[in-house]
Image 1 (cartoon, rainbow, N blue to C red):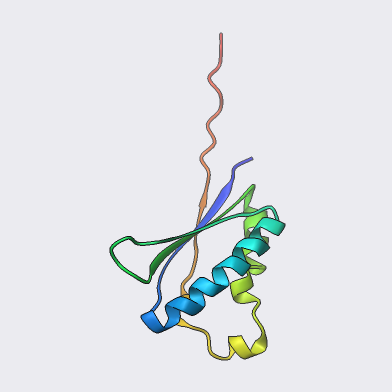
Image 2 (image 1 turned 120 degrees about the vertical axis):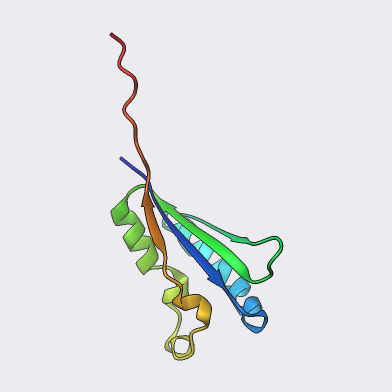
Length: 104
């Protein structure tokens, strides 16, 4: 079965950056508890520019993981004032699985 990967590029302002970084630990723990791989990278030469990756074993699991991401299940108070980071959408990619070579 093909793995599924969601990729999100986002930029947070300097005043939003600390709050974004603080939530990463919660999101990583939530992903791990669900058997999901989660990575976040900050661009080396541009502070506040991030790439996030969420990987699962299949498309259905990816949908579930994104629906349960701690970033989107914050308390109501948080949801009243989301940062620009939360409005960035994920792009979804499916693994290309090639059949093993046939030995005839």
